[in-house]
Length: 459
Image (cartoon, rainbow, N blue to C red):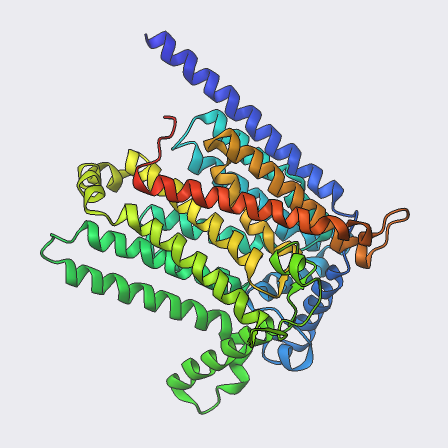
């Protein structure tokens, strides 16, 4: 028997070595591919990196046009210093490095999370499926966008929330928000994790004290994180304002940055293959109205309906009395490792399902979406792709649609001889209808399984 365990351990060790080799080879390949098919967006990174190094943080937004939240500017500032120290590193390789590193981090996170709730084989396939996915390659390695830099802290936040590390989970989602404001849609999910913990411990005598302490820690960490990230940019506004002035100026700064980012593209669809790209066309004003209601508001209403539905069914199982009896039976195991028990696995998968659907609905129904915004959906879809062949095939289709959408947008501004993006226009309604069908299938599966725990293969 000892020999059998030894052989099994050796086999797993060899599998992990091969997995590590694939990851390393994949990352090196990304570096070598980085100089190719670069989009003009890379010029913005270079301009902002040079600008923030020349004029400083406090003057940056006054002197340089920028519609980004401040979080990513710190990375650009660091890249500019690296570029000055090592000028022989090609710009395209250097400025695509954060996104490629983020994709590497996402793949590693996916592997280590899934290996605890499913087989090692499934964990490896899912991890490599994302890292070598043409969808992630098209965004990070070729185009040079940074959506994976935004997706990485969101993924970390959800994983930590499942593991009941609520303060760290809140910190990471705030960091994600300071990179891109779309992260706001995940704040209620973190709230659900905390609410679940309160319900789980509802019979404890010191529940009120523990809950109050936890909430205060989360609020404090969130505020401190936002203030620290904002502080260099508002330093010039703080003279003679005192401590309260820091919070006031931070609030005004974040409000201004949020509205600048959100109001930069007042269109139904900015090249996105979504509901509005199908129904109303690309680059049409989202202030046009139907039944005296703007398309912008219709999009928000539709997303809101699906959001409430998704969050409601996430809570439906996890906050049910029947589930809490089962949860308490596994409570000791969960304290040791949130993924040890059936409940931990079920909560992890259910949460990944919910976040996948939330970002799917955000892309499909909210106006002002860009083609690249769909990458976060691809990231989380990877985590549930192993559950069934239907999920895996849907994941492949979603990835293929993402690549097609990236090609459509890329070639509009970077013409390729012999191909016109307008040739894809007649197919957009069919492509979007396919995405809507997949969304509804995944949503139906999620709702159906809200009445029972997910059954996953043991590691």
